[in-house]
Image 1 (cartoon, rainbow over the protein chains, first blue to last red):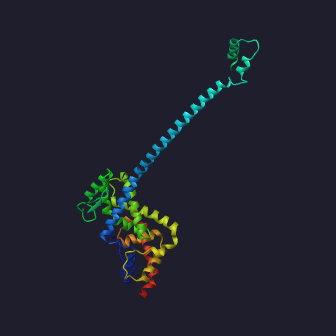
Image 2 (tube, rainbow over the protein chains, first blue to last red):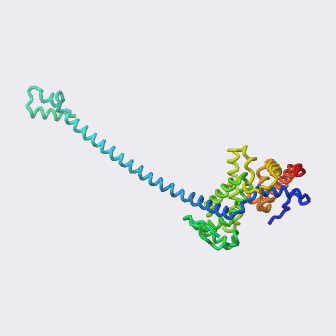
Length: 127
Length: 199
């Protein structure tokens, strides 16, 4: 398998010790259970990393749907609220002119005008 | 041969030549894995994990980092399977990926805890009868080497890779691998010179 001399120096037997120590330092485990465990660990890691994509995407999708629902509900409530405020403002605008001291009162109390003339005067003066 | 499938169930397969895979079968596993068959990928892991560990262990300092590098390397390989060309040697392709993962872990480790190298370099599987003095001096000698020189001497003298294979794994010319090996041996021999007399 190798294309070179394994020993540091084939003529020096003490290099055998060094090589042996080097191999001992880097020796891989020789236990079949260890390799079964590493295999399981690698496959679990790979599967989880790949599944993680979809799992993460799935949870984001769920979160996105919830967020979108909340946003739609908020928009609905906001729209309803502004519509109510608009209606209320319209009513108030109409009612405002019938309150004492308003333009309607001033016109109807103008001396010399009949009620229908006063009403006509009020209508044409309305802006 | 057994493999863990995607559901975590251990399945038994007929072992193709122990832990090594015949070329024809290997090609079949690769094609199946490329088509998304995780069980086939599991068989490739089973066949190559020992050599992948040896490559990683030659590069990083600790056994634990080697395991992490193998794990990362296989994940990268899995994700890059569609880019693997059938005319390539799967082992060489995989070893290069694992080596890159190991180099990356080594870089991050150096940044994190550069001071702990001496204490952690030893394999947890070493022979307890081994000379502590020799081991200590060998560790010191290895630290005098560049990372590449250390990797080359371990890949060559411990794991038995050829110069051409080492060049391919590390992405260096074959001649550079030879030169690194020569310098690494010279350095270690010099470092261990006086410790031998004490043995």
